[in-house]
Structures are given as structure tokens and as C-alpha cells.
Image (cartoon, rainbow, N blue to C red):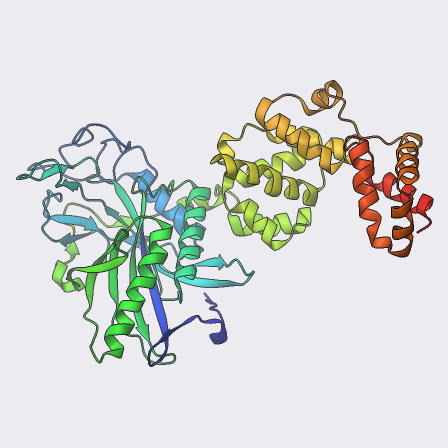
Length: 496
């Protein structure tokens, strides 16, 4: 596989007191697998519930309890690997990663080390300036989540909730291909979009279903990689960006003062805007990895992988390319529309709804500018839109037929957004049709010309003043005059 990275001149450097520095970032994203049951037990994965309510004897590590692999979790990992254009390893092994923590009842985590289920892949990331670059995926492996320690319910005791214990996670490890906080945020955003399209993880960071460990190091441009620090469990895309900027600055200051960076695990405190040391960074040998004796190696049939591949949905990159080719959209507009699967589906229903084949560019402009703008103002997303694709389609049809103007369409959209209804019925009931009768428009124009002889002389000397007459005529017609007919009549009457 060929992995493309951005050209050297596009790399973003950070200015220090003694010169420029380059930040190098790699990500380990933990994505909770969308499944009803846990990785090795039948306990529920539902969010919430009373503490320790979704815990089986396996999750609690009771003596003699043996793990049994959940086939759907494996299928979700394979689907994700396919979505990342990655190598699917038909033979993989589950290992025990040994460490003690109160919310890890077994005293080890079942994970994958040397032989993960998914190998090398890639994610193509689009930036706001239209540039794109490729981030290499090193591996994706399955592992079980730990429980949760709770320290703020008692001054003297800590509590343990094992509801998350045993929930399936996909750890998606990138190569150190990211060079700025903005690139890292764009990468996680794109990765989350892919996971949501696939239906393998809902990407809900507020619930902890997607979180990232961020590896940050700095170096002088062209020098070997520096010592990295890992910032654990960052649970929002905004915090990922902030953590990288803070950590890069911290490392630069230490190096410029003649110090050295210690490889360690750190935590980001968004309230204080700082990272702080958590523990020295463990190496693989510290965890004493060895194959889990209770689980056979995972052998996957090629036919099953092919079956999963054939049933994958259209993914964002392919959908974006199709929107550009099929609907004539700009790369930017297509990128906005495919960012969420629900948004892309909504747009296609506007274009194709009711057997119609509406203009893609007009539909995209209306959906992005009018609908998204109004939803953002209300703090809603596309799934809670009070306006249906069919209603937007009807508004576009009314514009296309010349029944209403673009300006009237905005007023109509506002009525539909707040009150609902059939756009055609609303236009009829409220007399919102634009005036296309040239005789009626001429009458309005004649009255304005007769009342403003000084303006007539000015516009004849300076034709750019035509806009004043257009505004007056639109005002006099209640915004209903056909704009094209109005312009033509004004130019003819004023001799410009």
C-alpha cells in the first residue's frame, strides 16, 4: 500500500525562542464496538443503568469463569478494517496484558499484541483549505474495557462500577503522520465519520464511546523523532487540539532550557489548560504479554470477510466523489454534506425525492445555507430537523417553476421551519407567489421613475445605481416582483 503524506513545505512549524520546531503526533483511538453484548460475555453494553447492573460472572472474574468470544464484535472489527482499506489478518491471537488496577477484576486485560485482527490501513483526511493528506493506520486490535473507579462519593472510600468491564473496544493505532493540532482534530473527526457510516461505533465522546490517547513529541525540522509523551483518555476533539498545543509548548520550553523530555504518560486538565504527569511510560515487556490460555487463536475464513465487504455501506470518500461527479457539487460542499451519514441521506432525498431529479447545486446551497444555518442557530442536528427533505424539495420546485423567487423562498422556509405545512399550500394561502405579469411590474416601475426624476438622471450617469431602483420596486411589490423581469424592464425604461 502506498501512503501519501503532505509535502514538506506544508508542514506547520512552531516558533520557539531559539528557532522553529516541528510537532509529531500519533494517535491511539479507543472506539467502543457497537454491539448488544460484551466482548467475552452476554452482559448488556447499554449505557447507564445502576452501578454493577450490567455485569456477568465473567466480567467480575469469578473463579472458573471462562471467556467466550462474541462473533459480532469480531465482525465489527473486520468491517472497520475494511472501511480503513486495511489488511485483514485471517489469523490473530488474544493476549493477556498484565497490570493491577482496582477496576480490572482479573488483574489483566484481554487484548491483542503481536497478532492483531487488522493490520495496516489508511485514512484520507481533508482540511478546511481544500488540501488532503493520508494518515497511515498501523493496526486495529480488539480488547476489553476496564471498569470505572469512583472517588468522589465518600471522603474515605473509593467505589468500583464494573458496568463497562468487558465492553469491546477497537484500538486504532495511527502512524506518527500528524503535524499539528488541527490535523489531529481533522483526523479524529474523519475517523469518527467512517466508524459512524459503518455502524461499528457511534462515536459518542460524551459517553466515553470514543476517546484518544495522544502521543506528542517535538523535534527540529529534519531531525530524528524526539521522545514522546502520551496524553491519556482525551474525550473531546476540542480537548485533543488543546492538549497537543499545550504539550508541544511544554516540551519546547524544556528542550530550549537545556533539559530533556522524559517518556511518560500524562493527563490533560482542560480547566487549567495544562498536562500533568501521571506515571512513567510502560514498555510492552512491563505488561508481560502472553497468549491467553483460555482463548483459541482467532481464525477467520476469507469467504466471511468477502461477505462482510460486499455488505458495507457507501463510505464518505466514495460518497463525496459521487456527489461531485453526479450532482456537480464543489469538493467543499460535497465534504460538508457527507460529514455525517444522516446529512448525506437527507440531501439525496431532497434531490431525488418524489421521483424528481432536482438540481444538485441548488439543493446543496439551500440545505447548507438555509437549513444548516437555521439548525445551528437552534442548536439542533439534522435528525431533529422540523423541515423534511420533501418540504425542501417542494420549495426548490416552486423556485424552479418561477412561482416564488429566492427571496420569497427564504420567507417560506422560515414559515415551514416554525409552523410546518405543505409549501405549495402555504404559498397559495398567503399570496406569496412572485409577480411575473410584466404589465403589473411596469406599473410599479413607472410610478417610481415618475416620483424620482433626480435619481433617474443619476442612474443614467452611473448605471451601478440601478440597485436603488430594484430595491424600491421590490419594496413596492412586497418582494414579489420577478427579479429578472424587473431588471429587464428597469433597464429598458431608464435607457441603460
